Length: 346
Image (cartoon, rainbow, N blue to C red; front, side):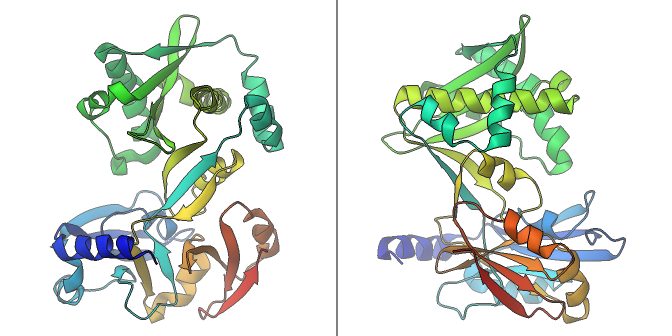
């Protein structure tokens, strides 16, 4: 572990008192059994791994990470508990990253990029490029307001409901000098757009936001093609500007939500978050069998390698074949008693 990174992490623990305690309640995935989850941490990206959609979320308070035991005595436990894991502590059985970084490396030309794309994604792009659309860049505050109010916010609310993170127009426009806001337009109507953030000095660009007009995502086929067009334009723009990689944004370490698979289909490489925040997963013994059986596959970290846990079940060999993408090294099969069986993917 790089000493400087370790010291920054230790300093953030010492001076942070803003980590939240959040209670989630709902039903266990694929069942109608009630389930409660307590998350002691700095984000809430893992609830979907355990709960059916429509779960309730309640903020209970805040705590300082080095005083976790006192916080747990105050706020209690649940069927599933996620707690911060400090690097000097004994490694737990299940150690999860806060999130994944999805980095898309870029070749020197768009022709080379298209040649390396997976078949289905390449066909989607080729089909989408036949549409009578054109791209235009938005520069004014009115352009940013249109993107924010008519595309970004409605799209996020539709996808994530009450749990959506909604950035402000002011925050987006404050970074306009180092951003590219690109719209896709058809028959004079802007149907969607993306916001690309350039690095301050050097490094990868950041895929900041994507939004679609409600008329688009009401039609799944149309949404699929528009998404492909926006990604295609974002990648070609980066290559034109001379950048060698795009950061496709924070990705929840949960493999059933489609986000990982979509980014992987474009060639993204996945790594654990660099700030060292890791979480230990605790499951109540009385619920362990059911929860392990029904929870989604989540990322584990060992020596900065990614693992994915899968329960022994029908079709697991097919699942293992699907879990092959850049960054993943191992699949762990977990039986109903929580006993692991490690499978290397080479």
